[in-house]
Image (tube, rainbow, N blue to C red; front, side, top):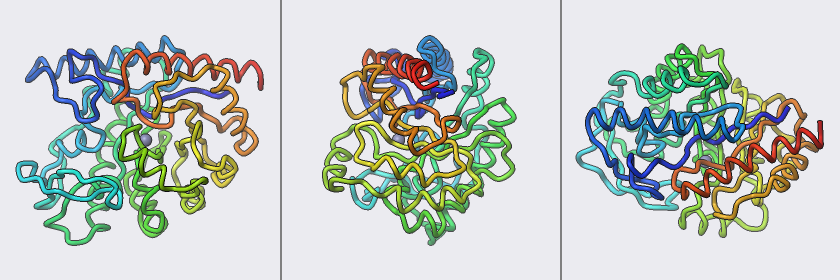
Length: 339
Ligand code: ZN
């Protein structure tokens, strides 16, 4: 009951990449970098095991950024001539690469770290991939001329990698779609269909993570503009409940999302965020257990997975590890109290 997991990322060791940054520069290169990424993957798995996390991830140690870590392995993209684009409906400006030709995968994207993690843990293993809608919201297009067609092309590449990850022994494949909270109409029009293409043929657990972002200033300002109640989930949960995905990962603790909206996810496993990544204050196990208890009024107990609101990549390492510990202890407390 109440298995635990994290959204996906953990801070990178300072010998691997610049600490405390969302877009860190690697500190190694060539074969040293490749080996360093695997060493950090193993460290991430160990940290999670020690904290009592049940469904562990690779900590996203092998990617510089959650979207561009995938794009680096795609042919048909010009990274040399980036253009400025407003992303997440103009919440922030970013220099983004440009799609200039038909998209194909260069090879395996996360095979090395997935197999390395699989070889060193007996726990369930989750690997995350960026979702198609979030990808097309983070890249410019000079080839497809149609956002949906480009999203479906990316979805087919994601499916290719996802099938290979499943064959590597991955138990859960999670697609990160923060864009779903921004383009709610498009989620029902084509966003869920794009995820169906990305998950076609998979038998493992398939999750979508939809959050209100890392604790960076642009997100904090955006959240301040959303009013007293955040009801974005209300517009998209019915479509997700009707989808073929098995699991939905949502933000919960310290969020202005009305908790009863979780009741709209009937039939899905729900990964509820019980750790806030937008503050350095470490949750007490008591806070974690209380959040699980609040969700229990709207989600059947066997469908609750306790997780983090979002990734912890840009967080200070000592704080992230303390939060990981609080997650494990809090879920244990909830099992004891509510079991
Ligand atoms: Zn997130």
